[in-house]
Length: 466
Image (tube, helix red, strand yellow):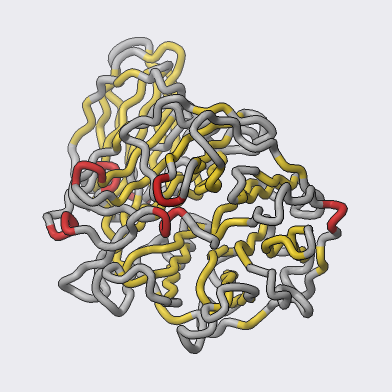
């Protein structure tokens, strides 16, 4: 039986979600996923650029029902278009979502009735239509099961399925899905048991070549050439008990990654947290999991090696949070929020990311997604100290004055818009306390983040141009 992390943990709407949501200051931007039912949850979230986001939704009051709702935004989450991937909810059951750009995305699914085999569908028109792109002869065996579709480039991608005849069933395309070729069994290490299989939505990709997927025997398969050839790491070692399956994988670059894995009987399995610094060839168990680590979902922060985000949707407000790690998963810090049941998270760079939750139970089509609006993550050492500056007036018509201490070795001022795009930068030196004037009126009216860095000191301000 194939499970993803959200099916192992509680993904139904908790009672504490009725309390007043209080997001942290870095996540105060609330966006509307626009699903046409109340309390719609974000089951899969794939942010493919600062503008383009794909979501698969579900009923927050009945997670195990079969739904195929999708939502897509092409303007950084300001507005979403919604629809259905399939003409009915009786044929397929979703396994994962993989976005390519603002118009093209893939979904994989297995057969709902028989709980095996499966298909992949693609849209190239922002979800208006979805076309069955399953390879001819693919996933037709009774032992087949589709777990993942993943593309490392718009042209190169794979469909990963369970073993058939002692070989994992993996199909690969190099022409954007126009045709698929079955990866030879000789290129894929064999399962170590007839009971080993892949896991729904448990995969990761980084860059144009690296793909990983996990199994229920806590083994991690890895390809460095876009899915053509594969290696597998040894089973994770633990004194906890028998392997119960890898639950989630996240990499912040091609080498640094973290992973959650279960050990013991499924009814009482114990979750463990691991990290790697060599692409998953070897794993080290983190002996004590931080209470601020979120079990529902985790993601790497691209461009910031060793940085990750995680989210949790606990039964009480005390265990509902989103958090971040700066040291490859060893310690975690709560971003600060209350009464928000987080389900999914994804970042596209070090200052653009989203956390999915439930839409409103009161006003249909509203809420459901929080956008990160804090400073860029991981761009400086974690021991950065506050920089004392005075910025005024704020709000203003675009002309700001900044009074700052000496920066004989130089300073850098960077301004980001609400989508996380750098829109202005300036560097210089100040031998003593200086009063500097900047005219940013050309940026237009709106809210911006301004970072001022001098040596190992940083100041971050939110500015408003009226």
